Structure formats: structure tokens, C-alpha cells
Length: 105
Image (tube, rainbow, N blue to C red):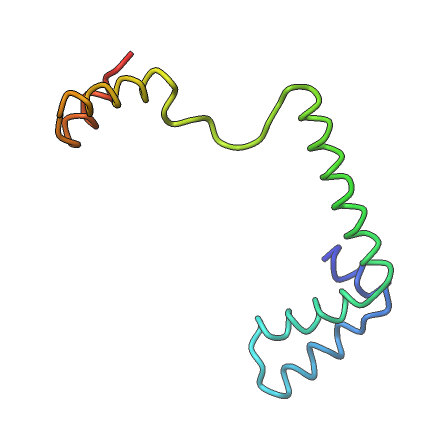
């Protein structure tokens, strides 16, 4: 409900858009898309969205400077890779490499 209030304060007539969509037989998804498109054109919401992006970027920069980096941890570390390559070089079939690599230290 907060978003609808904010959009209304920005000058978007949400009720009119939804009423028009309903009378035209448009589905909910399309009606919401119409409201979102109208809201995107308002300066107040554009500034808010821009500021949100700036804050996210600031957080990423701060995390990186503190040594934190995003993403998932590596599924295969360097030791597991070295072990798998050694097995491959010995001629082990792929299923065996997979099974034995999962048990590698």
C-alpha cells in the first residue's frame, strides 16, 4: 500500500489507470505494468530509484574495500582441481574422477 501512496503523491492517478484497465478487460499484470510505466515517468520516483542504485553501489564499494566480495564460494578449490587433473592425466574415466574428487581432501 505504501507504494500506491507514493505513486499517488507523485501525481500518478492509479485508480484511473486501474479502472481503465478493468473496463478494457486487461489482466492484472498489464494493469500493474501500466501503473509502473506511468510511475517511472515521474521525477520523484525516478530520483528515489536513482538514489537506491547509488546506495547499492556505495555498499558494494565499501564491501570490496573491506575485503568482502560478492558471489558464491568456489565449488572446486585449487587442491581439488589439481587432484582431478592428476587423475585425468593417469587416464581415469570422468565418472571416477568425479567420484574421487568429491572425496578429495
